[in-house]
Image (cartoon, rainbow, N blue to C red; front, side, top):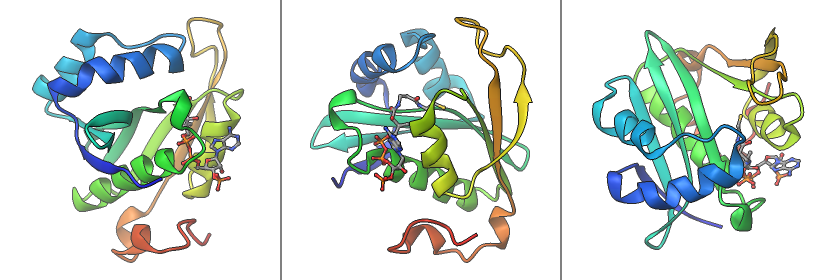
Amino acid sequence: MNVKITPMRPEHVDAILSIERVSFPLPWNRETFLFEILLNELGLYVVALLGEFAVGYGGMWLVADEGHITNIAVHPSFRRQGIGRQILQDLVRRAVENGLNRMTLEVRPSNIAARKLYQKFGFVEKGLRKRYYQDNNEDAIIMWLEHLQGWPSDWTQLSGWERDN
Ligand SMILES: CC(C)(COP(=O)(O)OP(=O)(O)OC[C@H]1O[C@@H](n2cnc3c(N)ncnc32)[C@H](O)[C@@H]1OP(=O)(O)O)[C@@H](O)C(=O)NCCC(=O)NCCS
């Protein structure tokens, strides 16, 4: 399903909160999203729009030459239709355009869907943060996508979207 990926704005936050609350055990609140998109100079957030309707979103912090993905989620009714892939593809493209050289994120070992999505983009599991998640003390796997600036500039546009490792 093709969606339009566009920078997140305050008018998207209602829809995003409803996705956030059903997607994460420790959801962000309205103030956090508004801070991230209006005040945090390191934050870069996008939404996936189906018409006017926000069906997914993602974001990252730009820290030195690294992009730290903070969250990515798709409305449960629209999952498994390629929207998460399009959001991540857009974030990676923006990371490259911003001159970043690598991207990182934390993911729960139990979150098979997200781990598979990241692996398809070439993210590699490289470390563990013990008891990282406060709701159930689950560890976090740390994943990295490196050497972004060494890639062909159009790699995310390739029709076979999986990076050739
Ligand atoms: C992770 C998430 C964003 C994926 O979004 P999505 O739109 O469903 O993903 P896509 O349809 O683009 O799937 C892309 C690839 O990811 C993998 N994937 C996605 N969902 C999967 C699932 N339920 N089981 C196994 N693999 C899955 C597959 O490799 C898939 O490619 P394929 O469909 O060709 O097999 C979505 O499941 C979600 O919102 N989860 C809750 C929030 C969350 O956990 N975010 C990540 C935090 S680290």
